[in-house]
Image 1 (cartoon, rainbow, N blue to C red):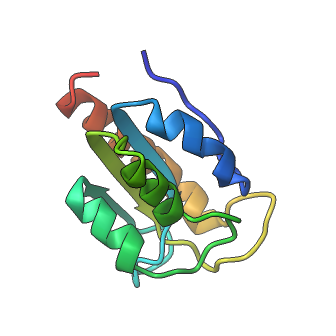
Image 2: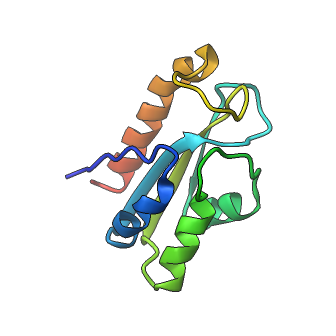
Length: 121
């Protein structure tokens, strides 16, 4: 019972699905101040803090922080939420991940699987 969605760069369209779920996992590049391909997982309040105060580099027209703020204002912030962040080599447009990010994708998928198992989904 897991639905995957590609947010691409038009993330404002994701506000509806975000406010209609109780469990949210976002996988995205993140400014982690770490070597390219580094993965970090942020959950609940740690996610909220990271997206509100972490690096602001993004190619999205609407940030994750904006989407979570919309959900919070509506009183519909998902109860369980996590961000699986991957440090990119750069924050720029591209059709394919860089080699470091591509190598990190299987570990990011494993991080998502671990979250789902802990949440028993």
